[in-house]
Length: 181
Length: 403
Image (cartoon, rainbow over all chains, first blue to last red; front, side):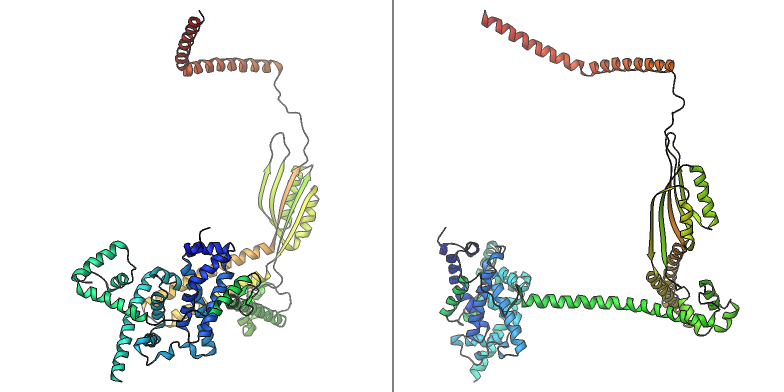
């Protein structure tokens, strides 16, 4: 067996299917921070982000036997994470929690520490924002985004284009407000 | 895209994201060298990405690693009991639950009107039966008499055109008792085939039935047989079967009954509905003047309803016929006695026949050999020459070696 850190994700997942703890640990070390970051950027509460990241890995562990390397492992992982997120959002809507409106703490923020971006993102159209965040923070390719969201590739392109235009506009507005204040 | 900028904004975005094919990316890179506007668009996109990258997230907490690895170690037994129902996720349970409820709803919506229609027809039929004794001398009123009352032909029906007449319009064809189709199959072996056949025809005639189909087979050297489909009035079926059994020894007998009351009642209800629809359409056409398009549409609808009425009436008559006349399929076979075949040829004739057949056989054999020789002879000669030459050479060689 090759050293785990030399193998690609799909090979590691297949070894993990065969029961290799080493393969799983390597996969986990590669995706621990991206998955945590995925939830942390989309939810207000760090504890909840940690719980959902844990649940995502638990789903991967339980579903390992059913995994088939039809798509990239990245797509597989983020598709599971996205489902967890949507499930969480539905639960929040039912319980009318304030977290349904994420990024709130970013308003009136300073451009230096990213809060400026959070504030602008919070006011974007949710579909466009999701595509933009998957591209910029999760670094998914256009094809991977299309697969994860289950939308055509051209839809991803057009949403991403519109998302960037909208974000620019929102950042410009914030900039003007900041100057006038 | 225009003459100066032959690229779409989305293509530039794809280039900035590194999401284009190599050839296409090179093409855009070449274009940007001479186009400051496109180069600025790409630079803007990259600047925006860098700006977004300023939002950094802290490292995942250590507890996450511990809890996930613990989940890995306990994976065969670990279950999140709050989110699963015996292996089914909550989402799947909800999806199947809603799906099932929707299917039941659809079934309910489809089935209820049909059930209500049947029940309506049945209740009208019961109502009519309840009223008949008061308006007719007999409780077992024949169907034809009901029709007479409805149409006003019967003398005593003249004054009862009110409620009963109205009811009868919608239930005139309703059955007055159970509608049962009876069928029977009978296989008999008889010694007197011709007599039995004549008797079958007499039984049919006497019972006012009819022969639907009859086939007689009579081959030399074998027994005669008869296959017939007979129709008798249903109420005389048992007596007629008893008569038929006397024609020979019964080998096999089967009887079947099929109750079609519900089917018939439903058909009558649909027929009455169609008739009412036709009347309404005719009244509409008669009383209202519309434009040509509406008139044509109404006439088309009347023609469709009329066709439907005629089809249902034919179906109803078919039911009536099957109920009124029971069907009996009779298979009659003659008891077989082997007989010496007449006309066996004499010994002289048989010798002559054998001599002729022998001569013909010999001729055919000679002709066959000649044809075979002509077909394969030339090829055989060639092979013979080749092989004999080779053999001769081999023999010469052998002799030379050994001498």
